[in-house]
Image: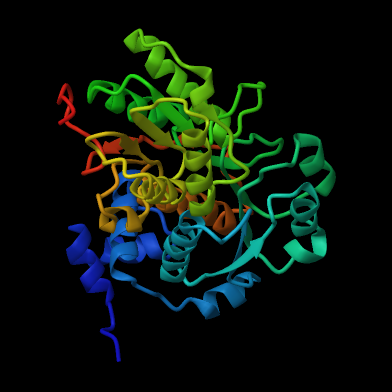
Length: 346
């Protein structure tokens, strides 16, 4: 039997009083946004769960939160789901996951009234829908959006700093001596603010700031961002004979495939080729070599998502004013797959 985590444990972890923890997990006023975030982060780390079934029943709520995501076959959404579920359970809610398949049809189906009705609120990561689609769907529950796509309606929106994070990754490769940096999953800018396009903009910005030209042959699109895609794109690039000494990969999952491909080709990392991923997935720290990556602040993102959503859910009667848009701060996590700035190849 596992150890039962108590409210006192959370209070000690967060450095606050037990009453403050009680106020936060029960949605009451009396704590600043910073304190609430600290308490919820402690809740997430410790796995604290509060039982509020009776309170939901009296308020006419189901206690269910719908999480609509494009897919679950990569580590990013799996880890996000675990984080959100822990936070929801700490407030007496449970998360139900629906996979939309990253298709317009799947996303519209997930927003149909009979599908949405059982939920007190939604966390939705849209990929294909346009604002008119969401207006027509008439989503009738509080909703927090993830990702880059801005949709009409009073929806809170929590986003990664895709451009800034990609610029950090590329600048780190340049500072380490790379001058021919492949972009695995890169996309030519068509004016669409999807993840790949935004991260490609950051890649280009870093080159421009450093005065380094981009060889367009090194900007390589990918069907998706799985480990297999990373492997196949890198092998294809090698087969075309285009030289490169650095690789920025748009996801850590695809970066794992890139590392495998480089090993199969006999290219040493980081001596011959430096590699940076994006997402700071847990697995990256245990690869050989350990993967340098961009941390988009996933833990804080999950805290803000759940905090914004449950504030909407529990204050629907009085409302809460304008929708909130938050952009998380990205940071570089330098590990073994890159060299220190200005370090020459061996």
